[in-house]
Length: 243
Image 1 (tube, rainbow, N blue to C red):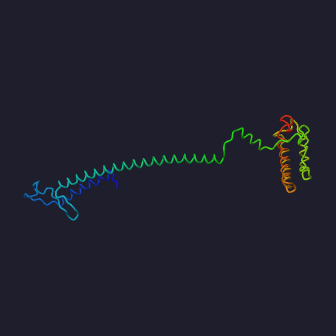
Image 2: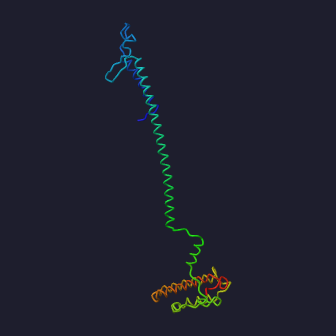
């Protein structure tokens, strides 16, 4: 167990005081007569062992014993202090290693996460590729046969000429007939109304899905979507329906 400098000092002083007190307590009463212990060479440092351990026989022996104990305590303190410094440096080194490992682990996790997300997202596409994908996803414009550009006359497929679509078909005929340079194109009232009626007609087609074969249903849906898409363009200005 490590001891602080203050603790060691208290222990050392206590040892000195105890040794001195024991020595004075156990030293024989001196008489005026000369005894064998008056000689410094005879029994001056001859201590004894009692019930509580070794007792100094004289104050001088107690002083020397206390000094020796203090010296030993100082040596132990220096040793323990050096061990404490070693332990502190080792702990600091371990702390720095752990911090470094934490930083490395953090960035490795970020790298793995980025790689995983990129793999899930797939290869990055260029701006031209994205534009082409948008064009491919858009409905096809109507042909010049399906829509007579300048008159606005629509040539409906047989599937959409049944009575279920009479109201929607009539409304779209009127909307395309009234299109011109100033009242057509993206964002105009004509475009918004064509989009609304085309969506309504598509819902009517879905309600009668059992009436048509899969190919008829797909062709009719594609035609309606192309009508809605065509209303984005100004007739005769932004090109004409494909020939």
